[in-house]
Length: 219
Image (cartoon, rainbow, N blue to C red; front, side):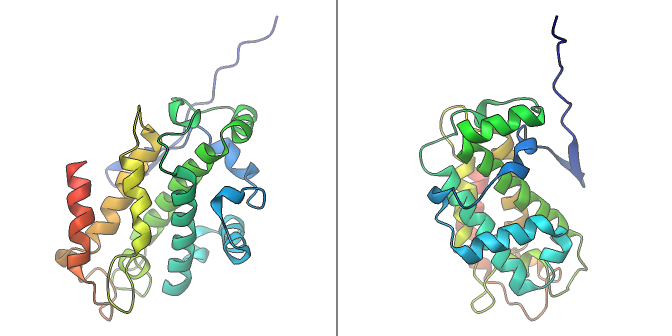
């Protein structure tokens, strides 16, 4: 008789008082191929940036403010294109526990955009955790990465995070929890009380945070 296999227990990533359980389809992330995923509308340089982010430690990828922002924009674009406006993904959004790697890879073929959404949320979470650990007032920070250098406004690319929060139906618990965490930290960096936590030469336009902050609070 075949042995009954219990799914592996999901590891938990912890930072401060917040922990984000790993995505149920973490085992599928290494199987993601960017070239066939035309729905994401990625350019060749964007694909190279994503591959570089996978091949190197996150701290290396976020080595300076310019490269950090470029990487963040690509990951947010992936989230925007994968999550779409059609509501939660067909299969991944309903998963509760961690899948064995072979089953996760199978889901990659039946619900690729669901897997990619979880991938993007996981990457953004890793980015936020890494940036939080960098030296206060340094050149690379959440503020320097997610706010424009010229006008101090919040990057326009933040909006997919809000869309994930407002997914219809039964939602997607992992994606929504991760998006809420990331958005909260991004917006907090734009609050006046945090002005000393970022590079002094970066003048953040605090007014650009008000609309997304209200949306997050109302959620």
